[in-house]
Image (tube, rainbow, N blue to C red; front, top):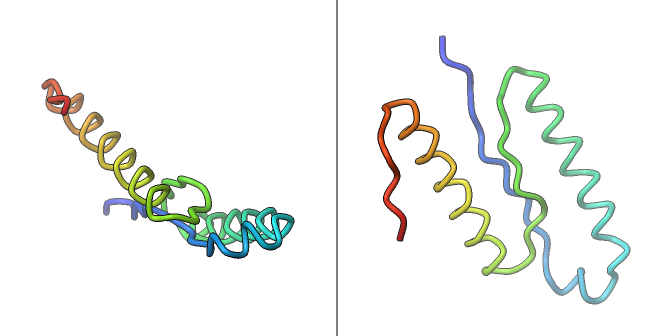
Length: 83
């Protein structure tokens, strides 16, 4: 049976990051706990950190997609085309 692989992308409102910056550390700690729980039930997690803006989310998704494509290409003995 294949192991579960999850892209874990915790979201946090940029407003809170600006208004109360100290709360971001608590959000990161909480996200780490959730990722640990997912791993404890057998899921492989791909973590990109807490994202607060559309740009951060887009960058995290893009990085995950690129890494997945590179791993699959290596498995198949092929090159990944770069944009």
